[in-house]
Image 1: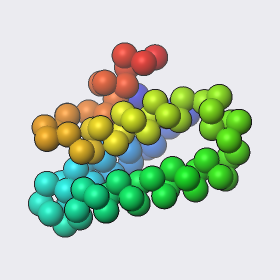
Image 2: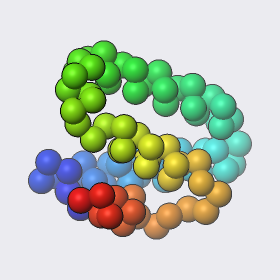
Image 3: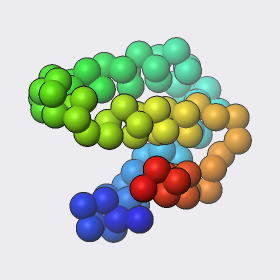
Length: 87
């Protein structure tokens, strides 16, 4: 599923998610450090776009889905498949 009609965005999201999942599984990064860094990045996004735009969008849903998929014990094949249920 392309993001903003750009397939490259979906591919980048898939690669990034897979890499983070592998880093946690192979102990290249601790789960607690992942959560800390992830939350810092979410805060930066919220600050840069503003609280109202953040709350009016589907950012919380996307954040929860991505964080869950990165920290799940089982690797989901595609980020887009569970996301379809929210469309």
